[in-house]
Length: 67
Image (cartoon, rainbow, N blue to C red; front, side):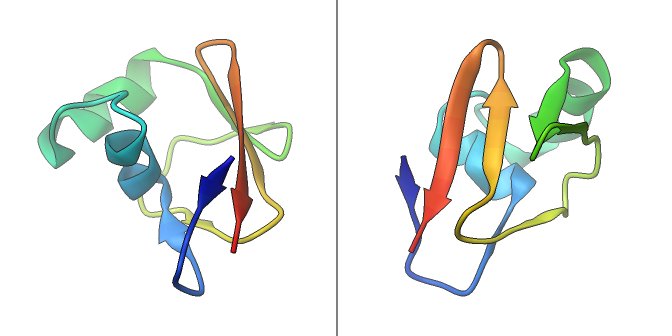
């Protein structure tokens, strides 16, 4: 579970927090090569806002956003 202290985080922030990418510059490439699901739907927008309750699947791991 990924906890946030703000109203939302972006998908790129989550990828950096979970060490899927080392820097923001890698996010665009990562999303073009790796399937990322947000609430069961494929997502490739690095600026996608993630809110508490959202479920994200990346490389076989599942993350749930909590406040």
